[in-house]
Amino acid sequence: MDAILKVTEDMEKVYSAGGNEMFKGKVFANLFYEPSTRTRLSFDAAMKHLGASVITADGLQFSSLYKGETIEDTITVICQYSDAIVMRHPEQGSADTAAAVATVPFINAGDGPGQHPTQAILDMYTIFKERGTLDGIHITMVGDLKYGRTVHSLSFLLGLYKDVSFTLVSPPELKMPEKVTSFFDEKGIAYTEVESIEEGLDSDVIYMTRVQKERFEDEAEYERLKLKYILKADHVRDRDITVMHPLPRVGEIDTDVDALPNAAYFRQVRNGVVVRMALLAMLLGKA
Image (cartoon, rainbow, N blue to C red):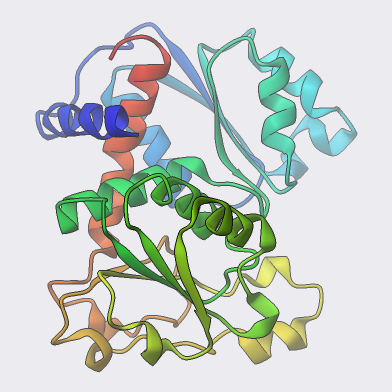
């Protein structure tokens, strides 16, 4: 993780200079079988800033997976076309299945409610830039902690550092899953589970998440929970707390927060490009 942060700082300079031709002649594949704006476009931008050509597949309904082709066969075919593959897929575990047969570097851009490692890495870089350290961070995570793959991945990475603690704010129906809390218990990481956002404001970082409609079978349950927590400017205006969100937001952060200096979520988006540039450079032996 420290090495990735260091290479990302180097990539900041490349990005600010308009990119380079590190991967001229290379072809990278972006496979997005689940809706995405930021992740897909930031990978696209990262690849092009490093001189690569990009081929894409968007949506299950427009792919051979829709016809019944296995993930293994899809990835085996695309490895013949590309020098690296990025994939988002709605099924948890799909990334493991794909990576097992990939013969070129493979990046998981989100597998359903499972993991979203590159989001977690750009979140780590954002915390590092905003707070100056990753050790001793107290982070409050708010909202859909059950299905929110971003908070799962970030918990595992942040838990590698010293004296980190968590406040987990959610309704009982959307609590952090046992796979994460058991990791906290195993590592001796302090965490508290509460239902009120006000109980999580004495921290270094507050990480808001949307309640994800696409993960609910019962729409009435989604409607009941979707705006359970709304962060307002008055919550954070006079506090030394960094506000983050993986986006998109659907009302859980008031737009009056946007103008505050501690609102970091749009800076977080920019960080995604340089982090993904760093990961591609490292995976292909250029950094």
